Image (cartoon, rainbow, N blue to C red; front, side, top):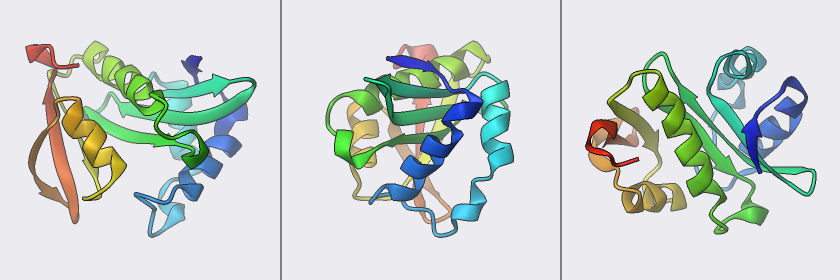
Length: 141
């Protein structure tokens, strides 16, 4: 069900990212095709595919230890897809040698609840979003 993303998945990834109700991009142009192609060429972006349909995706940035993206099509929410995709992104960051990883998300979202339940620690704010960190060395992921 989880696999590395391919070039042919880009249109669906963009569709999911632009259709979510929470954590919407104020400027969809901030996520470029070059960004997506970089993550496809480098370890870091995964999709959840079931019955031939991509239902969500995640990306971990091995350059800086950031969970760059975690999004599930709203029609497939609350099925454990986000949790599984988060684990894949965390694995990429751990394999890249990061002991502490981070992410940001909007407050009051399902994503915030997911990260708190998964053991992520709220450490502050960054760019008007909540800043979470996870210590991989402590075996949290």
